[in-house]
Image (tube, rainbow, N blue to C red; front, side, top):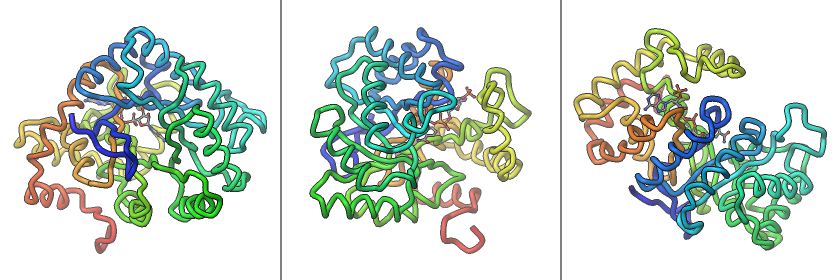
Length: 330
Ligand SMILES: NC(=O)c1ccc[n+]([C@@H]2O[C@H](COP(=O)([O-])OP(=O)(O)OC[C@H]3O[C@@H](n4cnc5c(N)ncnc54)[C@H](OP(=O)(O)O)[C@@H]3O)[C@@H](O)[C@H]2O)c1
């Protein structure tokens, strides 16, 4: 495993990590959660990602139970949560957003469900236009001062929103956001590759999500939606519709072309897609997802391909993707 600094912080996160969105509580039960986490940890994974909203808290409960069962040294891994969407399906006004009240209560609730004394990473899951950024920055700063959180960050905030948070933190001598969690994969590139450049200069790291575009970049959807795969999971029809409404055929065709490059390098297209994310030095950790332990085994050997991504190979990939941000027609 390779370990990367979380931006300019001292914390080192594994280049590949494991998250629980969609899977824990929907496709993955307590036993399988522990199996997947153990398979990842055995390959050097030291960061496990979660959120209050995943399976309405059940995802954190399963991860907490697995952490207890596996009883790894607490100082050998990092675990996260995120607040914004709320835990319940129809949250009351105080049960969602980035107010001091919700951030503090959601943190305490996540600690209980995860059965840990502090969150290593705590994210504002989306920006909240109805809370002054100063209130959010101060609440996160205070959670750090109280020892409940070690690093705080954001997910899918714009560059402008993050610059505003940094400015407030600088002016008020508060701790600024340390990491952002955006989507990044071969089909979604702009934010990480262009928009966030100024933030990297401020020392922010990134823990990116959906590196396989929810599984599309495994090639599994070539002949339809296989049984037991994400795009067939009940309650996630919106995700299937979203993916199928955005360049679906073209993305499937690109995936097939990438499959032959992966084969030439001795890997799978999933491994190629994961390794490709890690070529970007601004990425601290690629958060993977898995509905079974065999996927973890496959995904966590993606690092073997990284050294094989020579400039020629990357150019061949670029030609297939044909979506380099800033390039004519992209
Ligand atoms: N901050 C945010 O807003 C946000 C949003 C999304 C995700 N995340 C975080 O990022 C993590 C990863 O995102 P993601 O789950 O969307 O990642 P992903 O890598 O794009 O998709 C993971 C899914 O792809 C399929 N898959 C993975 N490896 C495979 C393999 N080797 N062969 C075949 N199928 C494979 C599995 O689904 P099936 O087996 O069901 O097909 C798996 O659950 C999440 O768990 C969560 O922690 C954060």
